[in-house]
Image 1: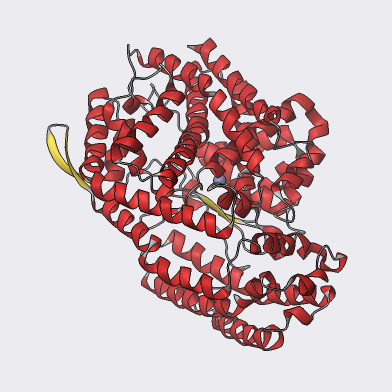
Image 2: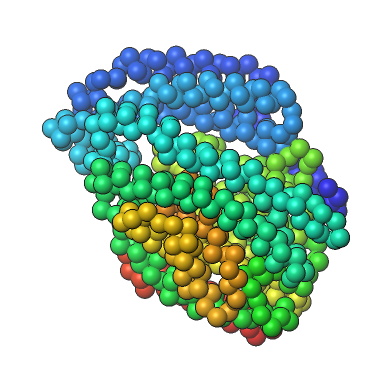
Length: 594
Ligand SMILES: [Zn+2]
């Protein structure tokens, strides 16, 4: 990989706070101590949870956290080492050793949650709403609430055993089949063998003919395997439906809603509002056709590159832009982000055996997080820096929480990261005078929003429709293709031409096979932040203290209660509509520039 020097080359993190090096004798000490402590914990509590007082149960949780804490830090340490050097044999061997040993220890502790969920009503009454549970109250109540969908221990064991050769095996077959696909594709006058990911990446190719041929070829493989894939999808959905019935959930989607502790009504409101905003998608892609100078866009063109600005941001400049953005928003945000640089908690350069992408890693509340980047100086990398620092700021705001409540749950996990990106975008847009740079910022932002909200909502609507259909009667591949085409047409209207091969797209989406109803969380997280950001634009200063309190909650209360802190009601469609106002303002700005 050839990369221009950006000054990111020397920005490496310092992990000394965790362990001094891979031979640190404290590594083995953590593994053996935690095992001994876990065994003592089992000895002390197994089979006895029903006899504890609420204060004793809270103490048990504290002990549990003191056993898990060092393992979390060790796990973080080895994963960070591995992330910057995935080719090092010694790191790999140590990683495997640590994972093996940690999972043995955590398996010893699994009984705790199960036993608590299985207590009789009389036994649990003493804990129900007890003040003495303190910070553990919410998680215990949630565990208990979801335990009502549990079956008897024997039945759960049978399901687990049968799943190995049932739904788990079906998922495995789907994933293995899809990853086995390879494609012969002609590019630049030469036939090349490509993986599915490589072929799909050609949606960003500047030549429309390449984009369309690539996607046609990609979906044709799924169509060829329609018999197998359709059979797998039907049987996974049917299996899910049977469990919904056995466990007594209201609807298929309620399985995920109760896992996320979100009401069916809030998810319905989210889905309704996103669907009504498909008009914005429509408006944007008509604009995009104009920007590309194309008469007609097809679905293969939705990620077609626009004339890009080739501006390169040296690392120092990006750091300054991001910090200035935070500064313009709030001093606490700025100070927390700055500490990440000052304390060498960021690993920035691209490296030959470093993993790709970017992430923020946090382990226990008493330590600040670490951020990994692959900084190359593109405007997108500046955004990513703001995004990951947003995660770090979120974690630092939650640092007074117990370990168990420290990490936020999936639907709220992007609350500070995407917010930070918007703070940066707004501050950059105000400063930037180059129209091309502005256009590429706005289109980048809008396409991100449509990919993580509207597109996920389309998948999620398809899941609702296909689960209802399959639970009533097994569906043929053509019937599922028809259901999917209805959803695509709803989303894009007349802004793009839907070519027939896209009817097979549903069969290429791993999430709907592997974790039913998972995808709506992306939309939830994304629109939530846009709505909060719009609320900030409307309310100004008075929004900030409430927002900081929101971020300091970690996962110590339900998403509905946490969002309530800023006065938001996630069951109310009008709250979600605020996000649309923000999206619309981006499209307005872009329209003016075009
Ligand atoms: Zn993120």
